[in-house]
Image 1 (cartoon, one colour):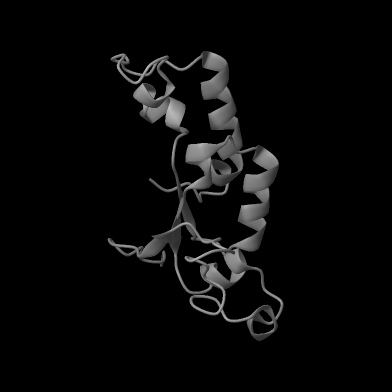
Image 2: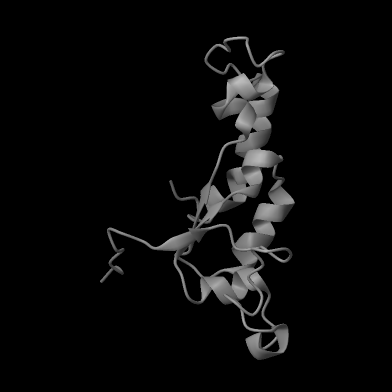
Length: 129
């Protein structure tokens, strides 16, 4: 019998907040020794089934990075990967804040890079919403 997937999955927005006021070490994550050597993503994925990826909103991902995420998480874990802001927030990329930006029309190359970076997640059935 196939495993039932819950209708609602709970996770957080991101998993790596190492410094500053919002640091997660010793708040969300125990100290590294207490994690048994597990990195933050591996430790997180043992407790949650999904995470929203924030980094992709601010910078391009690459397939090597997402392949490593697959290797560090169990089967069934899902990544909800944000699109880069150039796709979703065109006004932020308009020449002037007074300019009304059109609906984003990213270049085919930018879109291809974004999809290529997600390929390891898609192929391993880890790409969520």
